[in-house]
Image 1 (cartoon, rainbow, N blue to C red):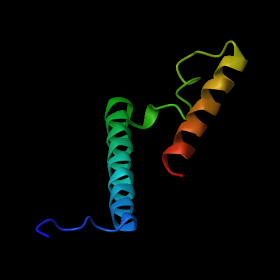
Image 2: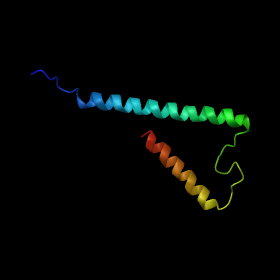
Image 3: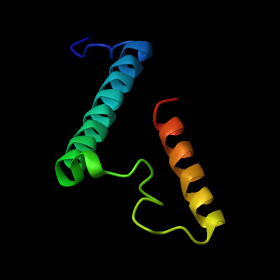
Image 4: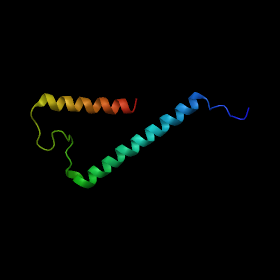
Length: 76
């Protein structure tokens, strides 16, 4: 009778989700600030094609799809 029971699962999951979203948001905002500091307003809209890498187009499309899947999965 000396041990407390653990908190309910929904409280633990809520805390874990909030901290995961906070860490991910801080990470992406930090990367955005570093990118802006490095390139300023001359940063290309699409980093995969902005520095002269245009061929092969299918590889760039796959890279863009992977980025979208990664970001959607991070914030689902």
